[in-house]
Image 1 (tube, helix red, strand yellow):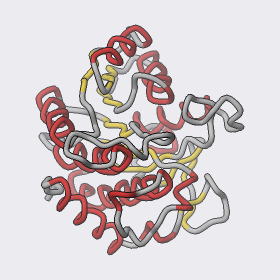
Image 2 (cartoon, rainbow, N blue to C red):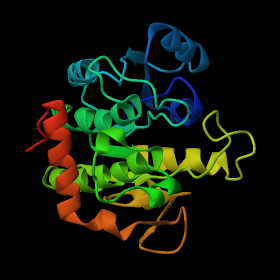
Image 3 (cartoon, rainbow, N blue to C red):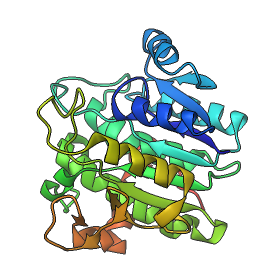
Image 4 (cartoon, rainbow, N blue to C red):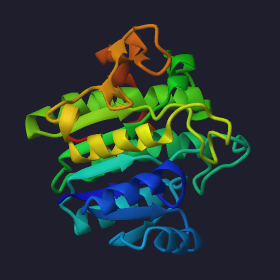
Amino acid sequence: MARIFITGSSDGLGLRSAQALAKRGHDVYLHARNAQRADDARAACPAAKDVFVADLTSIEETKGLAAQLNQAGPWDAIVHNAGLMHGVSHLRGKEGLPALFAVNTLAPYIVASLVTDPAPKRHVFLSSGMHHGGDASLHNIQSCTYSDSKFHNVLLAFWFARRLAPKGVLSNALTPGWVPTNMGGSSAPDDIDAAIDTYVLLAEGSGAAEGKTAGFWYQSRAGKSGGSGHETAYESSADDEARQNQLIETLEKISGVKPPQ
């Protein structure tokens, strides 16, 4: 039995995966951005142990969430699932940062950097096949698109895999595919159950994912660098350690949060 925390788990794939993990006997903890969403999450997943509330568009609230997670730990896995996509270009957080950048890119960096007492055994960062369209130059990342942020998530997964390897921490990226959720739309063609199985696999560190780190996973299989598949391969530029370091340095400057040493 594992203790697993999932950001953005009041609906969508985060909620579905939490339900699946709870059904398998794990202690699952949810996250919602406000009290109403937290109530909805509790109703939808009554087997969850608790729900943490934090608005991830806010640096201070995200840091507060990390502090709560340190107090409530230790954790077997943290799944960085929260994400924004459509209709948010005008939204900004309490510190004035664009909401999409704050939630999709900055929040997982802050949580992974601050939840270190101890670090979880596994980090899972949610990416997407759309990362192929992301800007690998990392210029002006605060104005990033959804595709840019999903490229950032691969860089984060790979950087934390390198940095935390001496502590035995595993860190992987996951692409669920284009699945029928509120974000993906009802006509999305991919298998949502296969996506949930991949969440479970990586959160548990079981099966094909046992002992594996710095992978890009789709439908329970690790993809290849630079291959032709939209979901089954990832951009080879994400392997560039200098580019990974550049992202981390930029996020440290923006957030004031130092990465784990």
